[in-house]
Image (cartoon, rainbow, N blue to C red):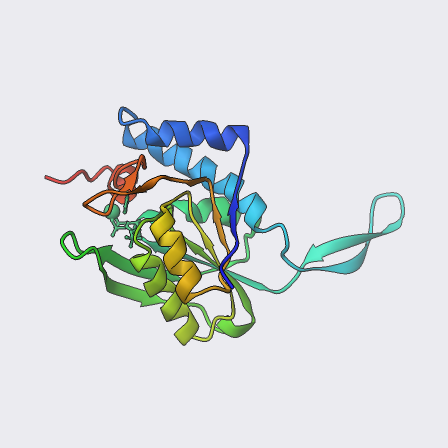
Length: 211
Ligand SMILES: O=P(O)(O)OC[C@H]1O[C@H](OP(=O)(O)OP(=O)(O)O)[C@H](O)[C@@H]1O
Ligand SMILES: O=c1cc[nH]c(=O)[nH]1
Ligand SMILES: [Mg+2]
């Protein structure tokens, strides 16, 4: 079994990806485009969340309605994933927020974890892992492994730009984790950057270019 990948298609999303990919986009505009792109992907990635039947009173009469039910958590992969949180919390204001901090080593391209704080009761929770970039897949696998070890069972990975190598790695090691993304890019380069990609998402969103 391999993980299903949903490439979200929406004209506004395509436009915000153009803004993010453009090398001349300054970090303020990059951040805003990332927020808006994440909100659009969030709409699609939450399409099958459970609801329950309730009865409510409109100003005129009693009627049937549906209410979101069940625990939801968003888990951004720091740093870049932090910028996707707001788009999800606008839809799911009661979602818990876990944090997984990690940084890719520039030479080995493997992630080094530096922070972890996860919500309780993960086994019953719908978990959305947020990271705009899926390159080698090393960071995603680290995050998914930690969530599994912590008991999470219903996990989805939400990205904006994916390389085929990263998708294959998730499919091999976590075949039950579906992926939502705005684009599937061509390949990785010799530095494990996604091509055509958008550069280093964390540096661009936080305005911290390398010295
Ligand atoms: O699939 P991978 O090869 O692991 O690469 C993807 C990871 O690289 C980036 O994070 P980075 O390590 O640059 O940290 P940052 O978000 O703090 O910039 C990105 O946000 C992902 O977490
Ligand atoms: O292209 C890439 C690869 C990893 N991390 C990024 O931010 N961008
Ligand atoms: Mg980075």
